[in-house]
Structure formats: structure tokens, C-alpha cells
Length: 81
Picture 1 (cartoon, rainbow, N blue to C red):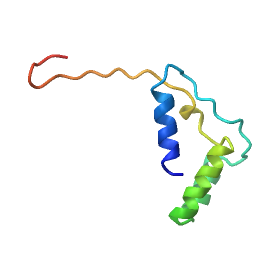
Picture 2: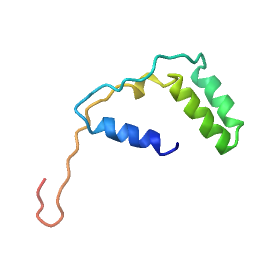
Picture 3: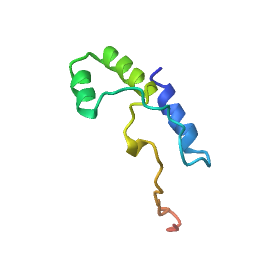
Picture 4: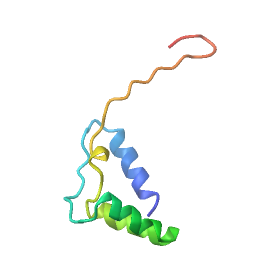
């Protein structure tokens, strides 16, 4: 289950679609409540807790939209960008 989320994000991140169809939010937990609840759990409990909250639509707004990122690089051999 842990690998499903990164694969999901990778597949949608590489497509031409700019918006991920997240589920409608059914969870009423705030970010602070989520953090305090997750902090007291061991990693297996926390992992399951996170998956349940994601499927309940409890995702911060800044994760729901893509922003353009400008990337440049310089080839060390040819000195080209």
C-alpha cells in the first residue's frame, strides 16, 4: 500500500492533466489534530491512519494543484544547457 501513493502521484504528474481528481473531503480532522493523532502511533498504525485519511479526502489544498517548476541544467562535458 505504501508504494501505491507515490506511483499514483508519479503517473498523474507525468500526464498532461493538471488536476488530480481527489475524493471529496469526508474527514473533519484538522492538520493539528491529524499531527497529534499520528505522533502517538507506531509506524504501522500511522501508515494505515494516513491512508485512511487520504482516501477520506483529508489532503492539504497545496497538494491538490500543480505549479510550474522551471528546471535548467548544464552538461559538464559540453557546457550546454
